Image 1: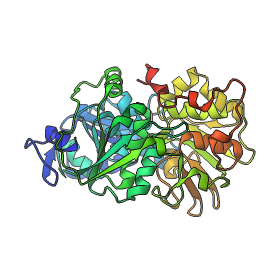
Image 2: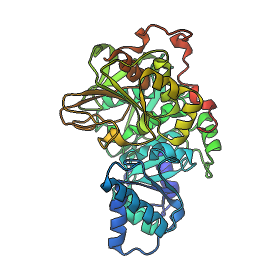
Image 3: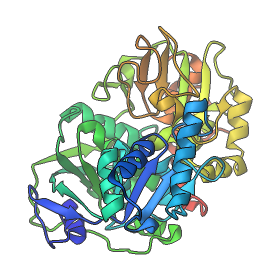
Length: 440
């Protein structure tokens, strides 16, 4: 599928794995951290006109709203760049979101699409049968100026999803399982391709969670098979060039892996690596100071619903701070309409506007020396969310919310039901988001 997407965007026509191709992307994405480097590079290049301003999307998400003068100036630089070159798609506080969650909502991602972004998690686009590729900021300056950029066509690794997940098992657990199996460099210089009969049990939000962390396995990009859920999503989002991509029956892969969803249990990636996926049962009782539910991988309405379900009628542990961050303004509004934010607040959680802040150690949830957090984010390297001597455990929203209640890592299935709480098998966590029109 990756070769086909690259071929449809290559100036030379069809290309194969290992070849160098000059590619013309559908979208070029910049944010308020990488964008300043790109803007400065364009100035050094003496660029007076952009090749196609309509393709460029600017998102202030890492430091928005600004936490200090430096971040305010960075966002101002991005805004000024957009005005100077006639870029209309500039998104900031109040009508924005985390870039990789926002782009699909805006109809900028869909089957057959190719997205270039100056951020490693641009691979999130793969959930919608597209390819998202992260490049350096200087590379992005070149493609903004000329409309094209060369890249090596990656070979593909096939991941077959089989079976149906058990309650409390999510897309997060699928990708943590894969990374634990192949390592942080197991897909280096390659593309991950996801498909199989188990795909039908993952809603689009769950697929975003998987695709987002493909880069944590070293992958250049990833792509999911297209199905009815994909088509329903992009029909509502307004994606214009709907060209579902299907792999040939005789497609060649570097490797093939199977993940039996019915055999998975919730996993937690133990610091300091996303590859340290551990069965939840092995780390029960680990003390937690902060719980963070949000980010471009797991700040979806599905994640917010899962967290609120656990928190409803309960109280966050005395010594724990809970931070919940919907990934986009649309998700925030939907969560408010459903009463989810009220449940979270009543339980003692803090709710933030959409931001990348704490995930990369910028603001809005920094860890002090010796503190531990359980987080739905995508990286847990040393110092990732704060002090070098803090620790970050990666988990799904069910597990994270349960830790907020207990003050330590527990199995969410062990919580006593609150009044009128459905049994675990009635949670239907893999079907919740499909009926939300605003969130597609």
